[in-house]
Length: 276
Image (cartoon, rainbow, N blue to C red; front, side, top):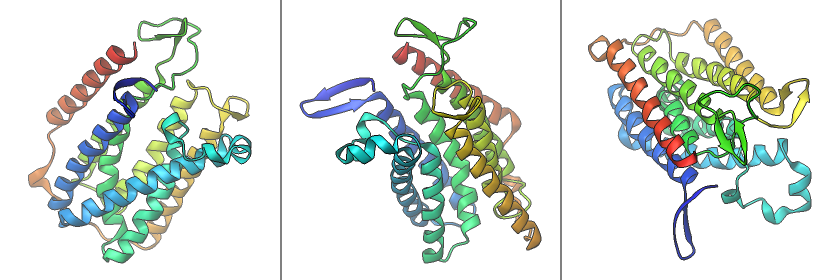
């Protein structure tokens, strides 16, 4: 990972900094959205803390179990060295969902109500975090202007592809939140959309394959998408009630487009300035 500055034994890495900025930015957004929907700031902050911790643990466990189990079985002392890399976003999402569900039971707040708020902010955090990721994609067969020179090769900036798609999903969920049809709709859209995003970006990355061009990440994405479809069917069978719409706070199309453009441009400038 690219180191920005260090103070004796303390090292600040670009990836870690961007993850922190992503979490803070998404937390501020989530708290504001929660207040509009009758969820207290304390409840939302507690949820954020729980899912962030669960997300990190889940991301590490899934990486160990699905990507390199033999290495960690033979070198158990390496398991806790997350500062050296080795996280699976799918594992983070899986365990964060589980932790969020148990928190909803304890707090007696609808899981889908909390989930709809959380997933609005989640793509924002993921997109900003990806700006600092230094796991680049495959070498470009046809050199494009946006390729990045790494080790003498021009590689696909898979991180850029992913944060652009993440930001688009963020804006879509934000706008949809004011006219959703039932509690849990945004959660379902996120699960399926995130799975598609990861599946697309994965074709430009280098990960262990299981069949043809399909990798372990594709398999995990398929699992998330199936979970989303199952939840959708269950909610339809239960005849989920329509939720109150908030037209007075509806996000203008021009505002959301400007927000999207700003996020992409700023992120791309930071990415190419630091990583280039």
